[in-house]
View 1 (spheres, helix red, strand yellow):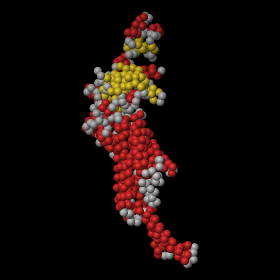
View 2 (tube, chains in turn brown, blue; view 1 turned 180 degrees about the vertical axis):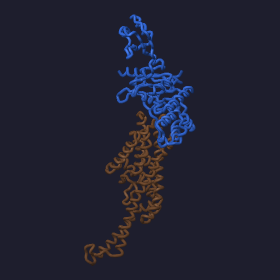
View 3 (cartoon, chains in turn orange, blue; view 1 turned 90 degrees about the horizontal axis):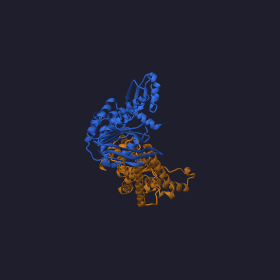
View 4 (cartoon, chains in turn brown, red; view 1 turned 120 degrees about the vertical axis):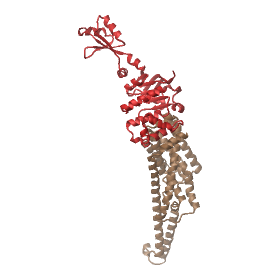
Length: 316
Length: 298
């Protein structure tokens, strides 16, 4: 097995892998920038509103009132609203501020890679590395060296997973670096304490490897079934779109793989943070059910791939 | 002598059609065995089954004494090249061979350089495969087959794309391998190469074996006899040989399909026709191949 793994790792060192690493960095940068920009803009608006309300009382005509007690009450309420808006914005941007810190940035990166952007990159990697064995007609050469087809697939799965973790690590490194840049460019409220940042980032970082294994298993199964790169990628992408679509329905959400992954990764909708692209309505199912569901799904995908490669002839 | 390959009623049905049908033959160890057939005859499918890439619908085969599909141990003693060679274009030739080596049972990495030298690719070992010419890729495919110093080589159209010098070098490699005791199972359309190299030949058509034997047995099993008679006796001679396949060529000579000149002479003498000359013409492998495969088709 070690030598098969070695062969697979040697094959991984190729231009497409570098391109996918750069794509992961670019995607996480794009998503982070969107969140930071929106958060910073809202924070500035809230602060400006409050400052304006404090500096210069709103004209009574603005409320459609004449000077008097009613106007004073409206002005007081306006000030309260402005203060609340600032408080709400601080609350909404707390994770944006957190992701300017190294630990928060790592949690952000784990969310990006454990949702659709990461899944698409891993599907592309699987399509090129396994689907490409068919289109490049190299599968026969590999199978003529050992012949144990399941073993070859398992080696592919391990290498895909390691490559996915590699992409995650680079995304984390990139995100930490972007955090330094964002701190200078986007003004957000002070970040929450380390404990709160860990509560956000910790589960994501610890749970991301299983999510990546799921995407690798999906890529492996699609590439084995379809036996060519483009079809394998689009087949996998279609699966992701379908499960995310099904997860929009309340009755189905808890029972779909998208629901399990959302629960496992603690994906919640944050108003001013684009830290994942996934069906994020929190399911009622807890982590144990999500874990069981994901493990069963990974096992099913790998079994399908192994049964298929064992049964079908290698025609290329 | 042991059999390196023994096919027993091998059959493969694809899309409802028998691509290989009740195919039985054996290849003795240490021989170069030519496996011939027109396009679509079932050669590649047979090779795929022998190498474990496809499963027979029925029947079986023994490769190096073990039933197919071959396991890792047997595969480590086989060098295979199926259809056109394939490789990872972004790799160098040397790296590719190292990857191939690592994919099987543990072997020293030095074998990669040895194989590259054997196919005269050592000079291009460090260049990316995408820059290789078709002939170089073909030689790289041969290097893959030779990588593990195999006991049995199964080659499907290995000389495609090779220039005359490459073809000659390839022939020399196979002859050296035979001297070293390696068995070679060679499927090729280059009949001149088969004639020069092979100890035994099998011809298949439409999935079935149509002839098997040494080159001499195959080409001599049916010869052409050329008969020259006085033009006034031409018609009588033709009638005398009517029971054989006979026709008159453009030069006014009779061409008879018979096993020997003696058979023709006796038939003519029985009708009191005395030829001026009787000459036996052995068919070339190409002629026999075309005859056999066209007979089957009709």
